Length: 407
View (cartoon, helix red, strand yellow):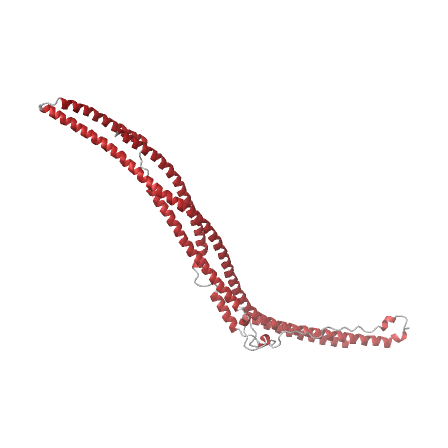
């Protein structure tokens, strides 16, 4: 019994040392698994943060705004002078097919981003389940808190009981050899036997406790083996999952960048077509303004030409008057330049040509588009000012002519 117990204690001591070393290494591997999980969790949070905007989208952004702008453009009928035919609208100048294609592509990319997020969620569930299972197995690995000193103390206790058994057994042999009819001898015999029985029970109890400890170490070893098997499978698997996750995040970021660019393009298109609608109205105002300016310019050129002609005519008259009064007394060779012709200037072109639609050139027609009431008032004030300037210039020309005639 003593040798068996000592052998068992040695086995327990060796098992404890091995278990502690193995558990320490497995704890390191578990820490690697947790670190891999945390990295993937951080990447998952990054994807969720970026993708939250796309998850909340009920439709492709700016769809309603673009449709509203297109409806406005379709209602804005073009002047036949511009369109070349009746019934055309500003919407005919819209590349609606390209816009629809961009919207469909955007919707497709948004769906891909959402699918990425759903797959990533399932991916992370698998990662969490794997680490949770490792944590469960790790928690089941419990190395009994039994030191070698305690075990040796138990051996010493057992050794003491075994010595007591040897002593009482020798005493029992002496009593049995001298056993008589006296009651005292029988009572002494019974007492010694009881002492031996109690010592044997205590020895058996110590042996049982040591055996129980050995059983606990055996169970702990089985748990360590299970934990080790799981670690050998899951840690490499988690490393591969991390590589796959990193690749997916890279693809996800590129997809998000692409769809963000498409949404920005849709925003720009909506703004561009809004400005297109406004620019059409501004164009009609500009055409009218240019026609008014050309008329003013035409009148100015005609006035200048008239003044130049009158100046040349007046110069001819003055020269003729000089010749009749003084020139006939002068020798021709004295100053030949006196006989040079009068300078006559021409304004070219005398008439301005333009391809601007003339049908739009009227003062108060329904086809003139005004941004607001202030724009209409400004436009009318320009026309009124042009007429006033023409009248003033005509009056000035008439006054100059009368003054020259009086001279």
